[in-house]
Amino acid sequence: MAENIPLELGTEKVGKLLKQYAMPAIIAMTASSLYNMVDSIFIGQGCGPMAISGLALTFPLMNLSAAFGTLVGVGGATLISVLLGQKNYPVAKKVLSNVFILNVLVGALFAAIALTFLNPILRFFGASDATLPYARSYMIPILLGNVITHLYFGLNSIVRVSGHPQKAMYATILTVTLNTILDPIFIFVFDMGIQGAAIATIISQFVAFVWIMRIICDKREFLHLSRETFGLDWGIARRSLAIGLAPFLMNVASCFVVIFINNQFKRYGGDLAIGAYGIVNRLVFLFLMIVMGFNQGMQPIAGYNYGAKQYDRVLEVLNLTVKCALVVTFTCFIVGMVFPRAAVSLFTHDEELIGLAARGFRITVLIFFIIGRQMVISNFFQSIGLANKAIFLSLSRQLIFLLPFLAVLPLWFGADGVWLSMPASDLAALVVSEIMLAQLKRSFKHEQEAMQAAAAESPKTPETIETA
Image 1 (cartoon, one colour):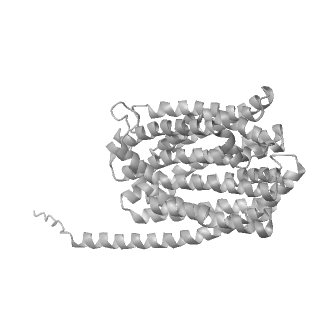
Image 2: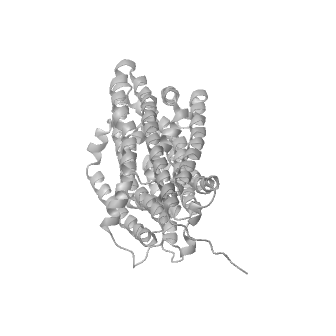
Image 3: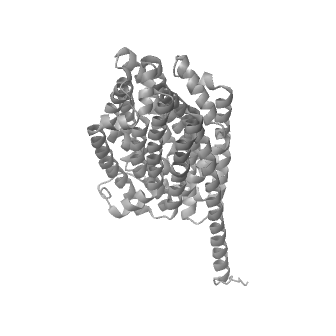
């Protein structure tokens, strides 16, 4: 229905809109991060330090799965935001069915391939004889439920940008709550160990997916699945996949970078060093997910106003989001510098693992207080549909900068060099982001000047003079 179209994105105060859209996303993303931390905490406390290392080895494969999910879901959600700004409502409705069908196809194909070659994949990721059984036990249930995972995340993104950020938040909170309840039951009561944590994860996502489907199939909603629009439109698919290519490539790059990191840690620090990285990754991820929540709140606002050519509002939401992100990443910097041992002790009682993780946490957050700006700028290009620029920014940090640092710094500093590679690449990526943002702002200024000149030259309607 037309009354459900979020037209306020182009008229309401930007600060109010960011709060309205970002707060549910922040709560949802924080809950999602806690969801991952709950798994790690229960696994670490209930299954031992080697299980933590085994879990860390699954991150690349889960990142790769998430990459294909974002290729479909984030691309579709961004395209819908831009189409709503352009008031192209019929095509926006078709995007939804495309997202549903593509998630089923991509999720099933990925799971089938990964399950077929699971052992060699995990070995390639850095698994040893001690950690392989844990990684394999966790990934089998996760991959069997991969289609549900893709549908849940993809459709939740659509719900958020279609004017229901609160409902998207509730879905994520539902998964976290269920996972927190089910984890100890499957791990300790049913004595299923790390495999129990994976089963709890899939069950939680399935329940949330069912709830989201009730929203998506509600005919009272402006965007809903219907027989008239259900089908795969390859033209729309190409457009949404092109936009989703940036986060897809970022996640793929992240996957291969994590593989390299795991193997470097295995070479210079052993299995426990991989576990330490897994712990630090979970802690840092909590703060990064909050920034991503702000980015998700920015996405529909920036996309809508870019489609409507309201560039002042586009830049206003960018600047406000950057300020919020800097507060979050500065907080992570303080935690990592002042309370590293207390933070990593949540995951394990093993003193050697605590020491390795605490040192790594401190090094990782050395310049973390400025990373929020780079993350927002990179996501901003994606939010307004400038896929090529977003892809370059996504890949520059992961491939152009991080991989060379990972190859060189450990030669001089050992395991510390692996940790140091992360802040070094973050700083280099920020410089590139600033240069590209400055160029974009200049293009906005030129286009605004051209629009103003065209408006000034257009014929004006004579005023009607009323006479008595």
